[in-house]
Length: 361
Image (cartoon, rainbow, N blue to C red; front, side, top):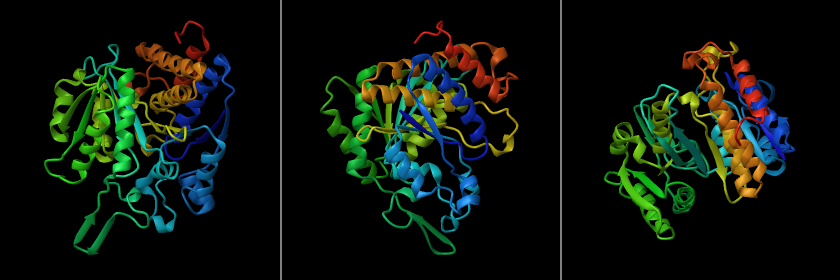
């Protein structure tokens, strides 16, 4: 099984290196047969090839690899698209049709948090919505008719809504059989109205799953007030992006949140940290690699589930357990969690935990 690694920008190379320590430990312990190949993207690719993401990288990911570990990107600092500043994250999601952005948020009793008992998963549609770089066949969905006016187009499709809702219900069947659909159909009558129509249609195929429909601003408040009541949450791209960051921060830190982008039909999966590239601490070896480590664990588990390979699922579970075992000790935490451990040292600690037989798989 081949894994593409794309370190990208800012702290991306550092957290990718730490993550690979951990995945390699799981590779050895569970005899996964993983091999790794690094590709360039972001500023490295821009300097070398004149573009932040080459189409050939996507072609290779699609045809030659089983999974991708994608580092952080500083896309806000990229030049305009016409000058080679392609959004790398969007490029992978659109280019590989990775429509399901899966973002769990779980509180740990031993980590200070603001949401006791929270254990939910936000299923975010990732290929359309308000994002102007992924809602047009040609061109982008933002425009300026004159210097004093800016317009943006939102795209919601039946196809996109049906498939993300179906994945949400399938996940709910493995959990507590509860799904909440997030919308703003009281204002976006057609776009969110279509999303809700699809949600209700899919719900008919899952009669055992309890459903709820919540307006996005009300849900943001409820997420703060009673986060423990929610299980699977499904949302369009923009809402899911904001709410998943909120949920992860409530759980203790955005740096503790894993994330994958996946397509159940093609079997492709990309592990990607929820947070950004943090250029202010780039090269200092102080970043917290937990988010990308947990994302890689999710990728292994997802690939195992899709392909019926038990040892991949066990490896993913072992990595998650190892992360918890390490951060349970305050002396082993990175600076953002009040500790003093460096990025590479943290990766080594988790890798050592994974390598031992005492970690429950």
